[in-house]
Image (cartoon, rainbow, N blue to C red; front, side, top):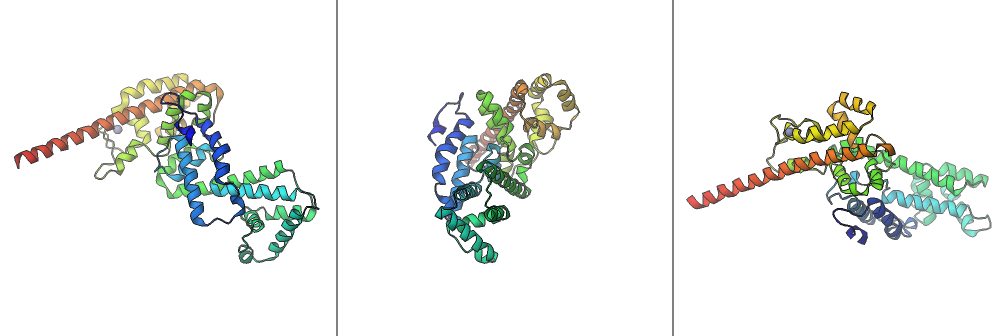
Length: 352
Ligand SMILES: [Zn+2]
C-alpha cells in the first residue's frame, strides 16, 4: 500500500499504476494457496473487506462508499471469483499432464467418484479436488470437464481460461444487477458503467494523467458519495435544493442542468462541451432530456474514443466546476448556519 502515499495533489499516482502494483504484488500474496482450502465465511469476509478497501483507496472513494460501487469500475473480480479462477486454472494444469502422472490419475478418479454421489454428499467432500469439483458444478463447467476426462482430449489452457473468464464475468454481472435492485443510490452507477470493462474515465486517465483527480470526483458523483447525499443524511434537512427556489429534489441531474443558482457557471462550461462535440453529438445533446444528458456524459459517452480527447477534457471540467461551485455554496451555507446558532446561543447565555 506504500504506492498510495506517492505523488502529490497535482500529479497523483495513476490509478493504472496502483492497480498494477496491487494485482501483481499484493493480491497474489493475499490469496496465495487459498484456492486449496475451504475457507470459513468469516475469513472470506475479512479478505473481501481488505480487497474492497484497497479498491476504494485506489479510486479515491471514502471508506463508507457502497461496496457494490467499487470493483466494476476497475474491472476487478471479487475474492470468491479470484479463488474460483485460480482453482479452475490449477485443475486444468493437472489435467494437461501426461496420463502417467499420479496427480492426474488421482484427480480423474476422485472426479468420477464425486459424479456418482448425490449433490449433498459431494458437497461434504472438502479436499482440494473436492473444492475443484464443487467449483466446476457451481459455474456449470462439470459437463465440459467430464467430456474432456472421458475423451482424453483437453483444450489448450488459453481456451480454458477464456471460457472461465466468460463464465466468471457472467456471474459477476448477475450479482451486480441483483445487488443494484436493493440499493437505491446505485442506480446512476449501474447506468454509467459496464461490468467487465474498465470505466471510460479511467481509460481517459491513462492518456491524460493530470485529470486523475477530476475523474475521482466524477466517480464520487456517479457512485452517490456526493455532497447532495451527505446533506440529506443530516437530521432535519430538506430533500429540496437549497441553492435555488425551484423546490425540486437535489439530484445530480438538477445540479448539472437545472439549478438556477448555478446557472452562471453552467452556461459557459456547457457551451465549451457543445463546441468540442462532434456535430451530430452536439445536435443530439441539445435535443436530449436532462436525465439522458446526465447519464450520457457521466458514462463517458458510452465507450472510449481516442479522437474525443478534447471532449473528455471539457466534459470533465464541466462536471467538476459545477460540483465545486455546489460544494462552495454548501460549505458557505453550513458556515452561516453554525454562525447563526452560535450567535443565538451566546445571546441566550448572556440574557439568562
Ligand atoms: Zn437548485
